[in-house]
Image (cartoon, rainbow, N blue to C red; front, top):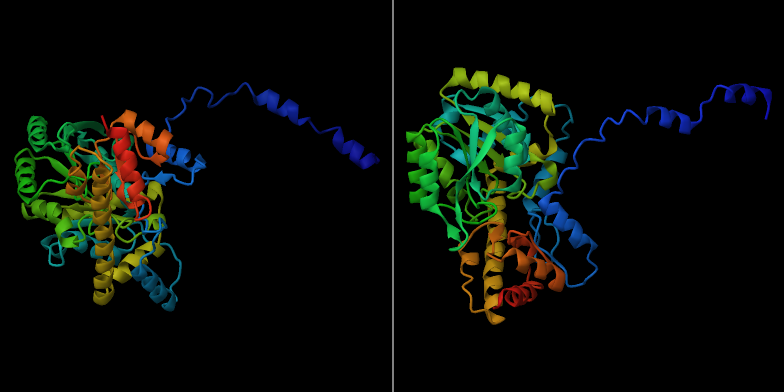
Amino acid sequence: MNKKKLAITKFLIPFESVTSCNRNLGWFTKVPKAPPDNIFGVLDAYNKDKSKEKVNLTVGAYRDDNGKPYVLQTVREAEKRIRCKNMNKEYLGLLGNLNFNKLTFNFALGEDNKFLKNGRAALCQSLSGTGAVFIAAVFLSTFFPKNKVAYVSKPTWGNHISLLERAGLCVKTYRYYNTEKVAIDFEGMLDDINKMPDECIILFHAAAHNPTGFDPNCEQWQQLADLCKKKSLYVIFDNAYQGFATGDAERDATSIRIFAENDINMAICQSFSKNMGLYGERIGCCAFITDGPAETEIAESQLKFITRSMYSNPPIHGARIVEEILSNVDLKNRWLQEVKKMAERMRSMRASLRDGIVRAGSKLNWDHITNQIGMFSFTGVKKEAVAKLKKDFHVYLLNSGRISVSGLNSKNVEYVGAAFHKVTSV
């Protein structure tokens, strides 16, 4: 070793000495391990399964009849048009793409809604529906004047409770689903809402309730609107499946529009993950209906403050895709037809699954599968039977019995139907 290298090495401390000196700090040794995510934990098990017969009925992402991710043709067309415009990639403002926000709000409330015309809508682009719910929850946790208690359906989307609690709200539940009848428990729902304290927060699924697939009908939504107005409840609508639920975007907005017609101020959380297949683009909108322009201005100032501290600026590309589709009549109509076809495929798979279970010999009533709508189905299969489906048949679903209908296709539905019969037969 030359003299220069020898001189340098005299000042070097062995790596082991450095780590051992700092090892006693233990900054995070007492942090409890977080529980695994319910859905992605099952997905991990599916990915490790080597069986050629395995079927994934877990994650809520649309698949075509070959079990492959599907990119809508209208989304491809919108991307081509955007490329031709030679647009830049500068930051969006804190509220996002303002034209996207307006188009999105009109999509939910209707083109001629009074709220946007009269300055009664505070709008903010979000990181899909998840981000929209969190923005709404943070805003309400900070500024809601009365009971900072938020009620969600039992059951609800697994992430709702985490989002609301993380934002600082106390979360409680109201009855929604009757396990024995495998149907919506509307009487129980009304009873629980009646017992809620006045002036608290309640969250509804606008359409295609996740995970049950059961929605109130028009008359029931009107009853809920009357009750919420009577008790001065603040309503959050999670609108993640508009158009994707029934295949009719106008029909899927019925719940929100009934509440709007009753002039109920509320927060509307929208997503384009499902109905445009923009899962990875993370595109949504958080909207607050306000009392007027002055309140809108105040609300938007606080929304800017919230988003600035969360992620600063939202993504630009996905918002441009949605803007391009919703602002062009021809492209929008073609998109709505694509959404309708996706919804029809899921309805077809529901019928095929029910019929396949019956053909396999089941004497049980499986009509609830076709009575439900949307991407998810509460099959009524018990936890023990779910374990058998995974172990013996390599069919993966949640322990609650919830399946993602889009995971079914013409090649696997008969196999799944037969497996369902074998684990549920007495």
